[in-house]
Length: 158
Ligand SMILES: NC(=O)c1ccc[n+]([C@@H]2O[C@H](COP(=O)([O-])OP(=O)(O)OC[C@H]3O[C@@H](n4cnc5c(N)ncnc54)[C@H](OP(=O)(O)O)[C@@H]3O)[C@@H](O)[C@H]2O)c1
Image (cartoon, rainbow, N blue to C red):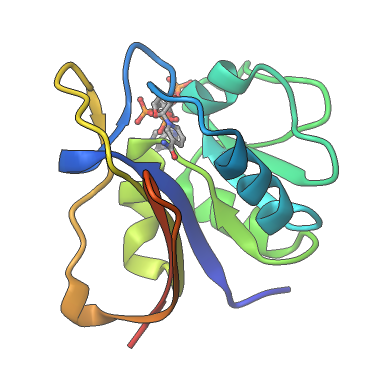
């Protein structure tokens, strides 16, 4: 059982997180950071994000949110409402790590205790999916690492 609900996301300028069902950049260091940060924890994600990854990620428990009562995939837990998904994820190992996409970030934002963000210094004019706007006055930055074309930020709710 965990009280931590961590939003983990990478967004470009203007909050773009996706385009055509995929992430419109490839940053190997950021994939490694996502893996290192989430290993041993529980990922909560929308069905569209699960489809874009295509499989459960090893070393992590995966909870997928869908409205489809018939949807299933090997190696993942399924929930049909956000409250059910959150309760199920809280019972699993480690922290609840909300891994997107936009619909699920928006649902989880009100209950999130932490954010781990990658701010990518890139314009994606044809991006079609966006990280929800968040109020910086409600969050305290506990760490920050600048890496040239991207910045990692760790935030806690005040
Ligand atoms: N840059 C990043 O960090 C990052 C991270 C994750 C994803 N992404 C990108 O984000 C995009 C996908 O995001 P998205 O917002 O389109 O989709 P999503 O949030 O991944 O999934 C949406 C789906 O979740 C289910 N859902 C949503 N609200 C629900 C509710 N209240 N109750 C039950 N089920 C619910 C529905 O599934 P059903 O249709 O099956 O009912 C819905 O179609 C992709 O481009 C992906 O690559 C980027």
